[in-house]
Length: 344
Figure 1: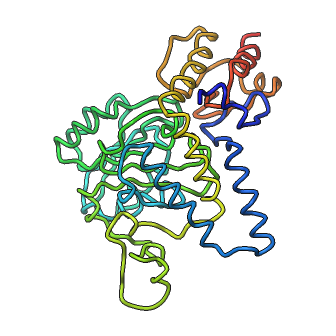
Figure 2 (figure 1 turned 180 degrees about the vertical axis):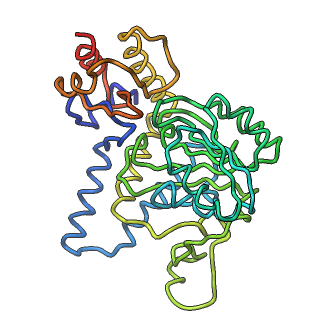
Figure 3 (figure 1 turned 90 degrees about the horizontal axis):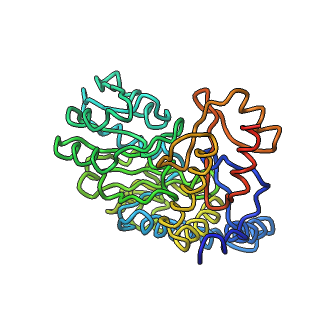
């Protein structure tokens, strides 16, 4: 199905240009959540049926980013998914990050300063060069503050040649930007933005080549080889796959996540990319800016925040600039509404 034909699956109030803060759910997710919420209200069912959504979502995510589902762990937030990775790096490791990166991919490394872990920050444009002299390169594929897209393939290539661990936060990319997760060692994604899921679900691709270095420090029953046989007592019996890093899922959040990811699959990330980029570049052109490569556009326009709000356009302000973000449910009318407000 093409995107224009599928847009009836969403019902946004015109002017929502803030997917970089949170994505809007497709009707399929709302329908499944409505059934589950009513079942919860009445106590009609046991929880195991809701948990099948976790397996569906894991499988869909793996297909979207081109990896095996056995190499994907599920969790709740990016920093939680990164915690066992950061805890496992050797003392005095040299970590390179981006100077304006979201702190969920900065703080997990910085809290290990007491054991000599040193975090150095560089601009996005300096990542390739810095990757050649690091033990860990941790960066967002797309920057939250600016929309800048990193040279993912080249950073991973240089880091691998240098023996550095590559850790990528793809939260602002996954769902609109095609990429091969297997190029990196670790890829973490919060699903509530471009994957249009309820907040509180996330994924980590953990390459089998590096996974054994990490300790599953949040292990519980859901990390067991057989979760339903891991409720009580000894011995320790963890999964041999990336599932050993799972945390027990918040059921209803995963009920909404599985159908949302399946919609992304159905439409195709490549098609979504073309749609989103076309709208972003229409917006840029209307402001006299050259074309870009990101679905996130940050602009400096006097009084922009107030002008957009008065026109009913919901965008964000990040690092002192207005940030507009364009996704599958947006239309040319949304772009033109924002442009009319900003260019009056």
